[in-house]
Structure formats: C-alpha cells, structure tokens
Image (tube, rainbow, N blue to C red; front, side, top):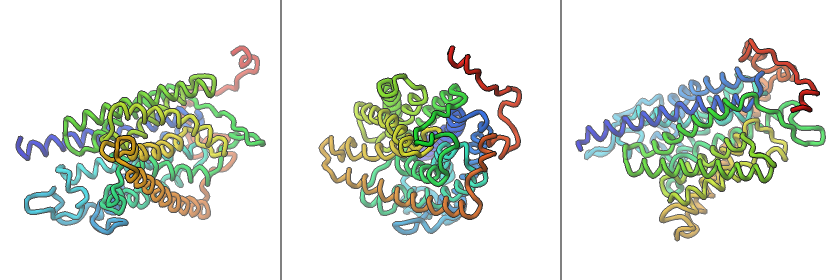
Length: 432
C-alpha cells in the first residue's frame, strides 16, 4: 500500500469517527431533555446545540494550541488559531510543525483538529445536564467557553500533549480522565455553586423525585451515545488499523452491555424495581469506564470493568442525593465517578502494566496521581469561574422563573405549545 493510500484511508476513518462523536451531541440533547421536565425542554436543547459552536470557537482560537502546541510540561505556547509553520506529519527529514505531540498520526492537521474538537465539546456538554433546570443560559455559554479554552486543554496537554503526566507514563487512551472526569469535576462544582432545584429536597434533607418528562427521548439519546462511542474510542487510533479498531470496538460494546445489565440488577435489588434511568446511566457508565483502557485490556476485563461501572453509578446517584448535590441527569455519577474508575482500571487490567496481570503497582499509582492532579486543576479553575460569574452577574435564574420554567423565562417559547399540562387528579393517582 502506498503512503498516499494509507493517509487517505486513515483520514477517511478519522473524519468518520469525528462525525460519530459530533453526533453524540444529539444523544446528549435527547438524554438530558428526556430526564428533565417539559417546562425546561427548550432550554436543555438550546444548551446542547449551542455548546458545540461555543466549543469550536474556543478550541480553534486558544484550546488546541494550549493542548497540543509545542511549549512546556504544563501547556502549549504555539499554534494559536491553527497558525504556524508547516504542520505536515513526520517525514524522513523530521517534523517541522508546531504540534509535535500529534506528529505520530499521519492524517492532515485539520482532521486531527476536527476529531479533537469533538472531544473538547463533549467535556462541556457533560456540564449541561448537572446544572439543568436552574442555570442562566448566558452563564452556561460563558462557562463553556472558559472550560474549553483553558481548563480542558491544560489537563489534556499534561496527558496527550507531551506534558508531565505523559512523561510519567499516565495512560488514558480515549479520555476517561481527559474528557469525562474533567467534564464531571466541572459539573460537580457547578451543581454545588448553583444549589439544588426548588423542591428537590424536603426540609429534613430527604430527596424528592422530580421525574423527567420523556424517557423515550432519554432512551433514544442513550442509543445515539452508544453508537457515537465507537467513534470516540476506536477513532482515537487516528489510523485505519483493522486489528486495533476491532479490539477497541468489541471492548467498548462489552463494557456497555455489562454496565447495562449490572445497573439493572443493582437497581432492582437496591430500589426494588429495574429503574429505566439507572439502566440507561449504567450503560453510559460502562462506556465511560472502558474509555481509558479500551486499547489495552482483554474482553473479559472489559466485561468486569463495565460491571463495576454499572453498579457504581447506582450507588453514586444515591450518594449525591444523600449529600444534597442535585444532578438532574446523573452526569456526575456517570462521567466523574466512572471516569475515575476507568482510569484506575488501566492500572489494574492493562496488558503488561496492570496490577492484576503481573505489572506491579507502579502504573496504578501513576494513574492515581493523574486523577488527583487533574481533579485539583479542574476544581480550582471551575470554582474560580463559577464564583466569579456568581458575583458578577449571578448564575441562577429567579425562583419565579424556575417555577414557570426556563423555556418561557430564558427563551420565550415552549417545547410543546399545543399540549395543556394538566395536574393529575388525586383519585387518578390512587387508581394508577
């Protein structure tokens, strides 16, 4: 096969994978909208639609250079607006570009940017669900820009851009920490600074259910995310490598399936019913958990990783309710908790370095160090941004607007204008 043919096939695969990851935004939109109440549907959809555009501008102007540009062990200092010297792949004459950390991939720089942009936008989208139903629309846009322009790429540089964690040997193939934990930490701090939705907790702290309005949307959204994840994980090869793509795709599939089943069983045992929201989030938990080790573990290990993720997400949702952190869609439990678990799983199950396959403790402790330091980075910057926005403009809508719904208050329209929302009769509730 000629070099030109290989580059063409690799580029086609990377762009296709990037399109799959891009389409995950539709999945997040459906999932979050379905898990929230009808009066906030327009707002959730608007956030999930706009956030990719915000991320695109932020990552193009600043984020990509900070993440992958040549610089130092903390952040990149070159390649702003994708401008710089020749950025072609490595040749016999050496690499002459300013994105040396991506020179290993033989596709054009623009294909690399497109694929990495889809990842960056995912980190911002994770925040949307955790802060749903009470955040100001403009504040979410500003925070998303800051996250993708500065916080996400600095953590990403440490791991994928030639930074200090990569030098230690920290491994995160497709982003359990770089993408999912970063989004999860930012979401957690947003939920804390915003406070719980009105009526979520009784005066004694007991959590109350605020049911989502359309689990059909949520289920469709989860299916879309599951499909997109094959691009998310297998696309991170940045090459049309049949063996690697096949192994990663099967590991991704099996972790999701085992996460789904384990969450079903766990919810059935703990809650008394096979709760659909837990089933959906269990599937996503398995996907998040396998994202870091998908290239380096066996199928059996991927099943175990997914099973643990599926159980974890059920208990995590209950835990965050217990400590009165209101997350309407379970984003923190899915992305933060299982992002941490998936990253640790590399140190336990990765071929050649995992503790349970004869590799010793070193990889596990390197993984733990990366989790802690990137967590501290995101918590510090996110807290600063949330607090600054809270002091400058306020981050939460008024109580009256929250009761009426953000669709009317923030956007002046309703998702279902032709449907009257009638309160249920007490007698009917008893019959049901």
